[in-house]
Length: 272
Image: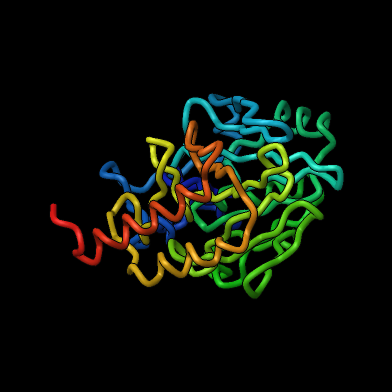
């Protein structure tokens, strides 16, 4: 039986003879069901009309993104480290070419995902490379395809590799996670933020929302807490979830400035 994939968010579900009646991720207030209605596909069908494009973002950091775009259109990031490679966030398309490229780069030591909107076909990836997929336990209920490769970590931090530590920030989702890569940005440190900290198109600011498409803001106190949780981390760059959404230098200042701007507007402290 197939593992159906939601065409709107690319969440893959447990095998079934017929598609699920709905996608809980898209029915949630943080996402949406498209005007054309709920649609379904499979990994086999996706492989027939899509491929993954690669881009080097900096030393030891590659981005891969599916073209034409699928679902939300996020990218995954491949962090290369002496202790092994980490795939950050997930995209739906896993094909033989992508597997061959990653294996040629040394394979994977693990996979970590920021939040449920990017869970996608994570079980396919974990099984293909024989590695654990790390998710925060607060979001366990959103994992639509159970599998032994899924590992649910708890608490506020979790060390994956000598250079990479996961940090729960919450906000967008209760288990919303960023990764701190101490060797990133040429040793200055980098955050891999998904859209828990959303890099804005100007690449000078970040956004903080419960729902980006449905425009549901977070309370200022929550944003201040998230920003404060990053203050103890050494970083100069932030790499976000989408193409050309990165702040390659000055990211610490950008985060503080963005949190202050957001809180001022939401609290009504700024005249429009």
